[in-house]
Image (cartoon, one colour):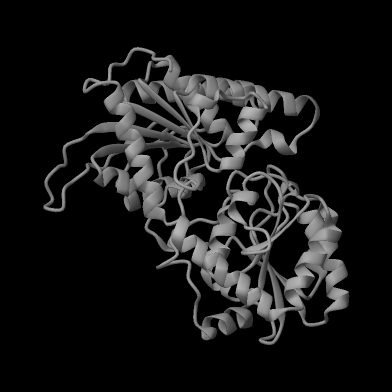
Length: 432
């Protein structure tokens, strides 16, 4: 996952595995009095990886309570059943590969069409590059009246050669099949228009951007000093240490190579410095072995792995590093901001929306380990600057990126699109 980690309840939630491909496990919308709610329209979310359903955490149940029947289609996995139980959605297991695999992709498309024909949804809302392409193709084939592509980032931005052209062609195809394209940031919207991937009139950024906002009042908020000390003790980090944090996949396009080079320099300049990594190697796009080996061999580098309960990890950090090559809108930046932490990020798509340079964090060029190290050192050597930028970051999150604002905008978009097509929401293939 490129945007933050899954809910902290994941590792301790009861699971009921879904073993049958295409199996539907249903939840019925209800009013507060327990009676079934009137269904305004049926929405089907499509994603390849069930873990990506974390993008809809809280949002799906909000939409359901607003009168929409909510379905989710993703590859089989334990989070699919957890999502069903937590959000009150009906879920369907359809194996889909994140990578390009022509034979498996055709099979997945056929299975997805079968699911959609059974549901007959009013709205198909697809996410992620592969989920978007398969979802929009299946929705078009089945004549779904409203097709929405939630663009959460562009893989072509970090690719080159023929792969870059292929990925861009896939994005153009997905956008052409969608009635509405919702990028998660304004910079992502600008890139779509500049690269002629999508018509401007189809694109709409909701509120200030972000796919789901951040829970800055309950989950992500400054924690007590006792939590900070306990987390440091858990990973054998001295209480007086200065800690750089990284949250995300340990993969090339997250800038792990640049972070490693910057770290090697900074650890020599500051003996109190430690590095805390929350995340793990991505099998689909692993970082070079020598980089991972170097990090594992360093006693001042601490691996938290996929610890879904990230707030205590943030509490142990002094500054967060996000040296990514590409983003849509990084949830890590919102989470760090909500925890009142400054962040050093790259000046790439998405990050320029999430971070106000010199106000809530610092932006540096992508793939520039020297600039990354300089910016981190600026924070590490100035506690007052860390505190000021962290406080400004939290104020901005509370003002502009509350989850409820994003959820309300999505519900409003659904209502608007349904009303524009009339009460019957006719199933002819529509073009706008």
